[in-house]
Picture: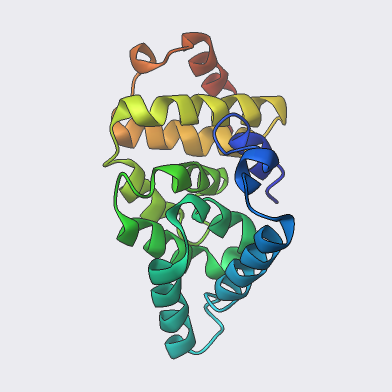
Length: 179
């Protein structure tokens, strides 16, 4: 169960006020509904042609500022396709969606988790560290020791050491990881 989705985005994702900016609230709700419907078609139980159409439509029509919503709107059945979309965007366009990939580290058996690790490993450490620190803080506060283990494993694979952390005390929280 993901209990930390919103908490991880605090300070990284825009506030609701920033999100709507000068748009009318009704426009934002409609946009949210449109994205939600497309994400529903990413479900691996949908016909392959529907999944591919949804991937193409998201890549061609959804504003890159909204890609951070994809994981939040999806479920396990759609995460692998969402990760494919985030990868297809490429860096730096997918920067805002990177915290979503860190969420998948909550359980490395989840669909898209390993593919997400592959994407994250190719991002500069300076970009990732603040996001990873936010995730460690969130995982520690919610006693999510499995997520700490996933983060710890990612740090090993990406060769990110304690010295690269801004808040090196947070690195110590990884000692509480399940494995």
